[in-house]
Image (cartoon, rainbow, N blue to C red; front, side, top):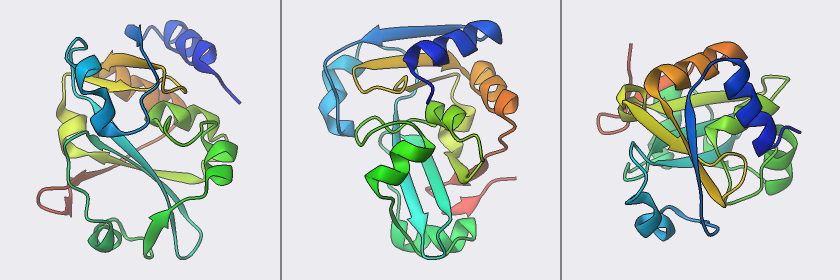
Length: 168
């Protein structure tokens, strides 16, 4: 599994500018409020989900986004969704609970995970995710994040969570 060092080396190899801030471990969105104040850009919440048919999903949304998991499956075309087990998260994303991150998609070599991206994050000039560990936050530009996904061959499903609809 790829680590924080591997992620940062990947960014460097692809010419993706990045900034990383080390901090105390943050396990939930509300815990990092003081830390976020000093880090520019959109902050995120990330949900690792499994649907009733066994498909895996990663949802990345702006940290204040309300996500209706009871309705989301009708928007993204999945079966009913629930949180994925920690063991499966570690096997596919290479992270533990509390460290879920879109950057973990680089560990999903088999492309088992469908990536769903919040419209607001897709439009944000800068986005911040954990770099495989919840003791740091790494920020990249909108172009850098798109370049990261393109290098992995990932085309996200972009969802407007306020309208509960797929964008474009």
